[in-house]
Image (cartoon, rainbow, N blue to C red; front, side, top):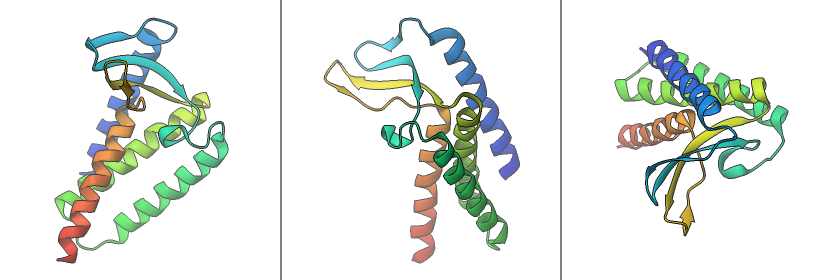
Length: 148
């Protein structure tokens, strides 16, 4: 199951990023919900929230390390519940999707923009980021439930 989630997630991430490059790069944003949600092309040369700008090789090395540790931890874990499997698959998918961008382009393609009118903009993100965030949330819930 982890492999199916991983492959489907990577394909979805790849297709949406290609769509963003073809449809949004160098063009006006596409408004989905006025004052709240747009598709807006961004080349993120850093990590989460723009930290480590321009450090492609450092970010790639850290991502490889995280991928390796997560995968080894998953393989060595004897009790693989559904939540544990899904959370690991999503984190691995997101990390791999953004790693592919970094190695291919030297940046990560972001294109989902949430904001409140013109007053507040959440950092632009992509499908891989969603996978990492949801996977991390599920992993935290799994860990908290296992501790009880």
